[in-house]
Length: 109
Image (cartoon, rainbow, N blue to C red; front, side, top):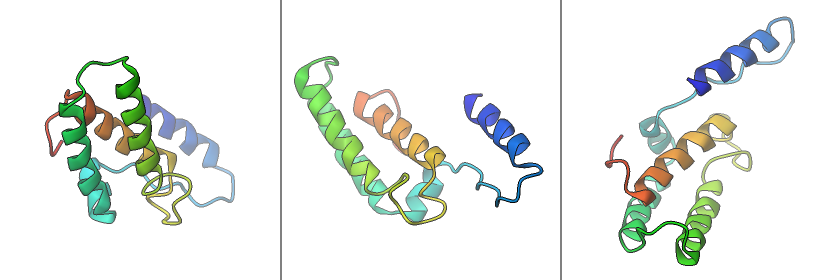
């Protein structure tokens, strides 16, 4: 898995350096427990995706960009929380939200 290999390389890099270890990645459920507004956003995303199933349309891309901006306020580098403020947390959230928006995942995964 890409996520595992990325963390192995970070672990190798961190050995011998005096930096705190980067927290391990979370699951979607862990992220929602830390930031409940992600769950609310996910429900909105599913509803938005139901009305816009055709990809590559201008409306689809506009909705998706709006979703990403909303998610970036809750998870990612701009968040001050040590666990929510990581790239891995952002990637997990975006992957889950995209799956819900595109209709390829069921809720709660």
